[in-house]
Image (tube, rainbow, N blue to C red):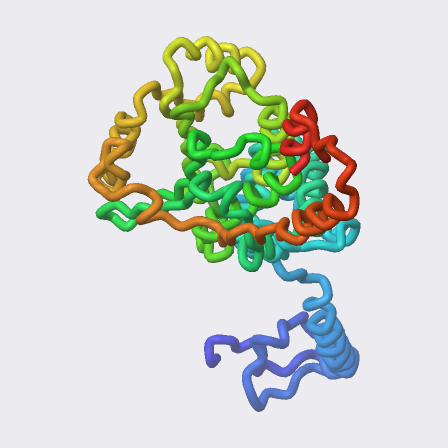
Length: 385
């Protein structure tokens, strides 16, 4: 500070005082009058500055917006999924139903919901409009059919469906589960009785399917399935045709089968991992070749015809011993080890009183000799029953 002699030298009366930066004035030194005159203005400017700074401080939070949260990879990499989630509230509102395969559909933060929507997109090759239409139809169908109740509280005719359908869950050494439904069509005792009522057959088949869906545990999912990768929430289906004639297929079987395919294609997309047709005559290989012409590659690649059912277990080397012996494994038959829907014996129709009435009528009319039912009419009467 002592190196600035000009600040301590007396200024002449006439000349204008030299300009001196205020920030270099030593403490205790009297500043020139020109500087003193400027100080009130400087102070006024300084007093206004904090106010401006204060305004700037209060305006800063309004200008700075919170950074938008990054989308999870399953949304960022799949615009179609984002679009379908955008339509979900309207879908749920229009159908009045939100349950799908045991999952209560919510938003894109809910992993089970994400997996359900991915399945509907995959089934429609990423077409959002088609996926929305199918999801809507599936929800409407579930609201009407109540499939969960069919599985949990429904009961079905043992004479019609006993031995026809089973469910197994086999676990390998690493804990991975293989959920399998079995349809043993050769076990059908009375084809017209089992298949003639298509609605009754559908309810039984849906009940079995819902038991399998429950074992997939979609509602417990903690990770999102890869859109183009492996899907752990799928099952295996086995159709055993031992003793079934492919050349004399009953019309009732055709009708029930077609209706089942239509329902399952709409209500259960992307739940099938593999389907095995076992004990199929080798001569029928042409049928599966023909399927490839009409069905998508994504579907037909899952179909596997096997002429000898004993070779089925080979397809599952990690759980081969758990399969029944008849299918090449080491376990007892399905009847002893597998689950199925609730079956109950049919109520017997009392016919004795009718016979008594006929006898009494015969006594009252001894002259009548014609039989009540002719031999030619008997088959028709039996068919009605």
